[in-house]
Length: 317
Image (cartoon, rainbow, N blue to C red; front, side, top):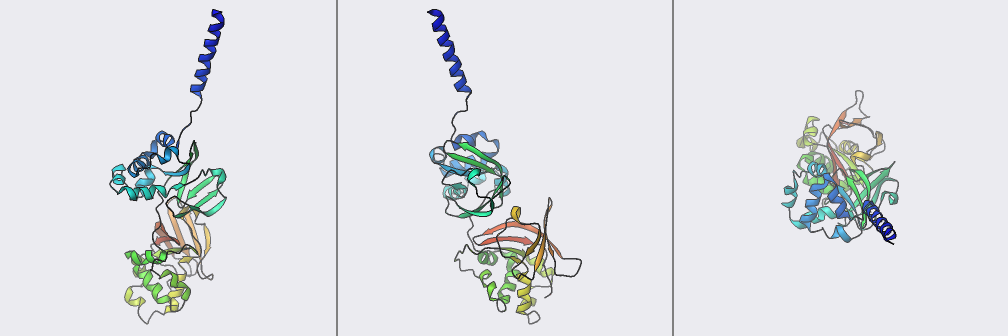
């Protein structure tokens, strides 16, 4: 009998040991604690009062890394917690889908719209096992939890607050390009949407603008006086600005290399992407082609994306 009892006890200890070795169920909060590069996100979640939501609610979290926060201008966690809690809550919920959304549920293709908990609409690209939320790339997919899934991304995705028209009006370094647009409308009425700063917040159709900075416009001889003078016609300016507008939404990772048709289909640019950045070549001007560098990428509007460039393409005016 004693031997029999000993056998049962040994079996019990072995079974208990096996259960301890098995992976234990983890909530999204548990997963975040295990990731060394998500410290700033954890601080943001605590400051926003969202800890309980990530323990129990069924959600998908696109989790920005510490480097992603820093690239967005947050030096450390204290820079986040210095903001009002409501503002941080809006920022965090802009990375949350209120359902379980693993990579197996992601539609193949680019810029598939997804509704976020923040009420904004972002764009998910998924091809060849690689996912992007707007411009942010997923470095880890499908960290599964009892209450959803975590996808780690390398950037912070802000809520777009302004239309392209509003961004052009409210960004000082784009004022000369906007002045050209305002005059160009007299010859090309379709350009009016880019001068509308009323805040109607359209979503579709969407565009990508490669906007020369004021310094680039002036280097091309297009200061405000010349733009508004009779020496430059509205038709010439319509040609110029049309050459800087693409009829679709592109973020830097999804901007296609090679030829890209522009607002007026006569105009085609050539996109060259490399480890050092993005260049846009003018295919209209006689050789050598004018080449502009992207100096600021992925300025996101409700109805598109803006890239700031350091050279004017098609400088005929």
